[in-house]
Image (cartoon, rainbow, N blue to C red; front, side):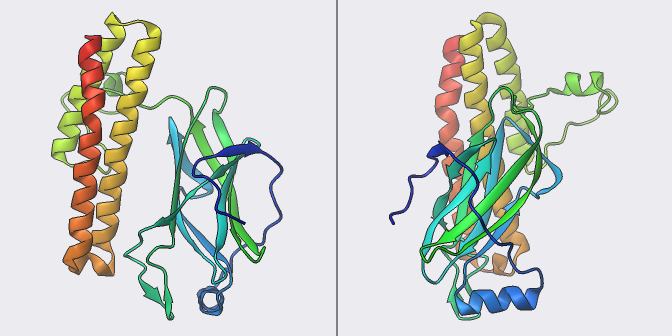
Length: 256
């Protein structure tokens, strides 16, 4: 069976699957034997995670027989994750090369997908063996693009307190504040439809920056941070993410 198209969705009942081994010994044994395994790195499926605007799912999966696909089930729809994502932090484990075992998927949340939602992530090998994880994520359809003044109104902190965004450096944080002001100005002058399109495009660009920064932090915190190649890769991802911001900025200028 061929690999499914990335991001394609269809309706359907969740397929039967077994849970991955819980103990490290059993999990290592499953990897070395070539059985299908899956790890969902983010979001945590214990109900503590919150997704605003977009649900980003990342992890890795392996089957010596090959993967038929990694599928994400949300609100009765099945999404196909992108396979073959580079995972230099895994490398060779127990004689198994897991460098290209990563998967990822970004789902844009729609109206009505608010509150705790059941999320299931299943990896199915070409031999039919399916392994998956299941849990809850608190979803919000609209991206949370709050400015500092709104944070003070909602009790986020006293006046004059610096606004911090997890996963962003000083330069990226400064950019995000400027973009939020531009978005507010665009919403005041443009039609509702144009303003929403500009807001979503800016949210996607900001999310790309956050993902790139998260990836850089993961590389630095892993054993492979001492190797220069992963750091150069993370920097290239950041530069590529910044380049994607240019269309959003041009769109915002046209709306002003």
